[in-house]
Length: 105
Ligand SMILES: [Zn+2]
Image (cartoon, rainbow, N blue to C red):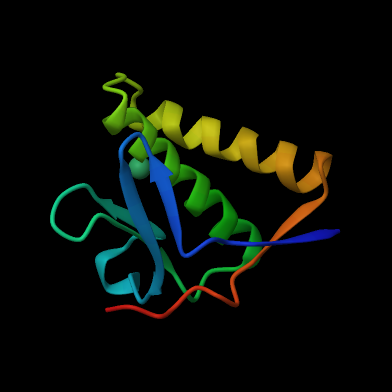
């Protein structure tokens, strides 16, 4: 596997979204994205590596959907994230390294 560091922030259009690991279990989420104020993608810190990667692609796809004013449904975002992760993980053999990503509230 090729280890690839998750960047602390990701540009989408003219915006930059910070990435953080958080405890989202109480909200019943594996990930979240906020488009206003903090512009932040949070990924639950307790889920396994594969689920964490899928969640990151999922939230990035939500960001792309928002910034470029697309109209992708929640279900299709989920399918795209699964497919993208399979290509990256099982095809390119890329495993994301979360060691630079801070824990956030
Ligand atoms: Zn979603």
